[in-house]
Amino acid sequence: TGSVAATASTSGSGVLIVITIGDPITAGEQVTVTVPSDLQVSIPASGTPLNNINHVIGTSAALGPVNQPFQTTSPPGTSVESSPSVLSPTLAFSPAKLPTGECSSVDEVSGDCTAWVDESVDLTFGFSHSLALAASHYIELTLPLFTRQEYRQQTAGTKAVTSVLDCSGSNCDEQEIAVEGRNSSQIANASWVESTKLLRFTVTDAVASAGAYLEVTVPRAAGLKLPPSGLDEDTNFGYVVQSGATYTGLTVKATPPVGAFVASGVASSTLSLPSGRPSHATGLIVTFTLDSDIVASQCTQYCGTDSASPSKASVKRDRPSFGTVTLALASFSRLSGDLQHIVCSSSPSGAITSASWVESSSSLILTATSAVPAGTSVSVTVPSSAGIRPPQSGVPRNSPTLTIATDTQLGPVEATALAASDALGQLYGVTTSVSPATAGVKVVVVLSFKYSRDLAAGDSVTFELGRFSRTDPDGTLPAVGLTIGGATAGATVVWTTTNGQPSAVMTLDSGWSATAGQELSLTLRIENNIVSPPSGMPTVRPRTHWRVASNSALSRSWLVSDVSLFSDAACLTPITLSGATSSSSASSSADPGFSCHFGL
Image 1 (cartoon, rainbow, N blue to C red):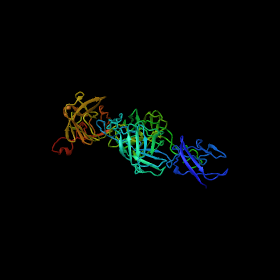
Image 2: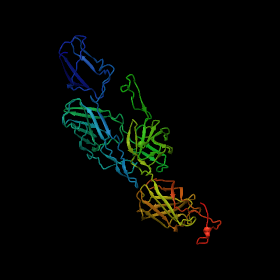
Image 3: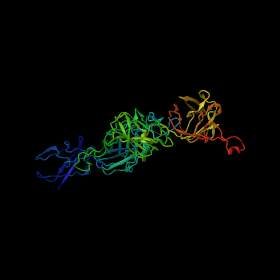
Image 4: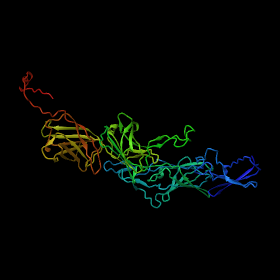
């Protein structure tokens, strides 16, 4: 030990430390000098490599001046890395989702969005600084392409449009943002300038400890949103710390990548149910476009380093996994529970050939089997043999409860509503009655049913009535009646015959609608000249097709097939009397006729 003094000053791009020795040092003696933190010398934010030749030591000793690089800048075999205890700025977002104008509620009739997801984020900024901070000092963070603008899709799956906020001038600036987080008592206020994309944090209570790690959060209520174009993994954000007269320019390098299912600014993800029936296994077609690469094999643990490996002797112990796309299909199910391997087909061919089903979360997980470049339109077909079933109550059009997400490391996406999905309804309480209950004659037909979704004016229901016929040509039926929930309503019915199959197509007239679950009862009167099947009709006739037809104006595709129709208990079976036999019971009856014995 001995007497020593030290001073520090900036020199070029670094720091010059001058140590003045107060006691003589003999040649060959090892000297260790500790410079205290009071001199406020900080390690570079990016760390420093091992044996940096830019770190130089010199002496003005008269008997032997020296000016050369340090032999080592730290103990052999290690390097000085940036860390939260030194100066490691970080930026994090929650939820990590890009603004796409996502709908949270959709009008089933028009298909228009009626409510939107709040796409603002909690933004958490963590940093430390080599100098103490006092009240009125500030930190300015530059966030290019971030915004307070609001994005809204008008119809699910269309290009997001901006609305509500006019961000010209200073309209989208926010001067008073109440900061949250563990250091909000010291940095309590923030402000946002839309034109310059500057987020300023103001120190309200002194931070006396130089190098203290600070973390503050701008809450979602402030309305900040991530860049619609996304964030790459290597995105850097600059920030400035103003402490008294000292300005320090630094860079945030630790930011998470964020992607989105978009193509040319349009939300791009769909689910089709080409042969869907409620509570029946169905095939699914999923299409999407992701704005970041999907990597077929991505490292998830011990990636190219031995620092976290179980054994220090391990230089590299990568544990790869395959990038996945997950669809959460609320209320969908599978009778046999989980399924680990589903063989799929995809376009591009080979991109996704495997999937799995998790019953507890109703999730379909698509696994990438080859790399998919950003911007590629991908279509995946899951066969009905997988046993995935839509809910018994059906599925509304563009349902916000059906979501898509991905864990790809180059641009993960949190669960986001599918931009478009097929509607699927359910017919139930289906009955038909015929009067008179006679085969091969003109009859009154009454068709009743309930539907699991709303029906609007212009919606159609098709009754395929095999083996019925009509003595008049195809066309609009002149005598029909409709009740909805027991009240008289208006409808037009057209009789058509296609490939020998007769159908009655009922369309709700203007001004009429039915809510989900209401009973509709359609009466086709005797004046329509409809003839019952000549060979009769059994009590239960399966495979009679009823469907709610697509309405092109609304782009609907509700379809239900193979619904059993239940007729009156009396079968319409013709009876031919080929002979008669007397019996004592017949002869003793009041009518001295005959008894007819027959079998059905």
